[in-house]
Length: 312
Ligand SMILES: Cc1cc2nc3c(=O)[nH]c(=O)nc-3n(C[C@H](O)[C@H](O)[C@H](O)COP(=O)(O)O)c2cc1C
Picture 1 (cartoon, rainbow, N blue to C red):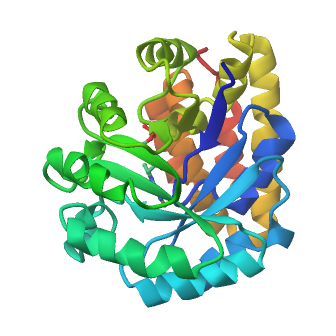
Picture 2 (cartoon, protein in one colour; picture 1 turned 45 degrees about the vertical axis):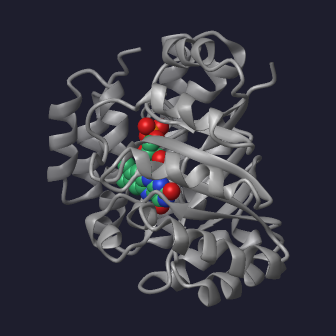
């Protein structure tokens, strides 16, 4: 079966610079959903992130909107359409407490009537197609199960499900049974998202979910940037090749960030966001991450990473 892989949005990491540099060194992803564009702080830089001239990655891009006001959503979706984006993704999954408390992201999931009304007011008046990114619920796993049948009458591109609740954040395990239940409650196309961190995990999941062809990879695809390629080829990349290519990728990413960020602390701070994941694939990763965190100059940063070795 044809496997379609999506790069998950990871705010702070998977911005346009990461996506562009990533696609120079790796293959495997077919599509990426961008970190969310909100309606307040950081709006301008989020829009810059999706400007077509800033996006040269070799995969399709779907901008994501986090908003609970139909008028804001419509305005932004139209703007994104004019930039060339035929599909936008609506974030109904963000678990951050501040967002949830405002009934946005996963915080909106218990309010079924509001979601239905939002879609009624938006889908028919924007030129874009709409996909959803959801969790199982805000606090209760049943939120999504109750909502799904009510979404059948909308013409949605697809529904991306991360099977945890908002309050769970990233603790415990993704609930595969709950994801299976979603499939039986909806006519829509689904994308599975959650805890895919190795080729073996993907193989187990794809045996368990034979009808799924669309898979979204988040943290596991940053920790091991070879993972999408390994999934597509159904075999691991040899360690010696990984070390060489990872180093080239790292150096190119550092170089690109250096062009836009001023001063070593900004630059090291940005690289640290990626090292939070990469260190998980390195020998003595925790110590390595601590040393990177302490670096105040580029010289110290390079000294900290010089001895880093991948585990597998
Ligand atoms: C630091 C961080 C930032 C994230 N930012 C976003 C975001 O902007 N929009 C979104 O829909 N999901 C966001 N996510 C959730 C991921 O896209 C994904 O759904 C989640 O990590 C589960 O997939 P995984 O187990 O493959 O990592 C974020 C997750 C993390 C850890």
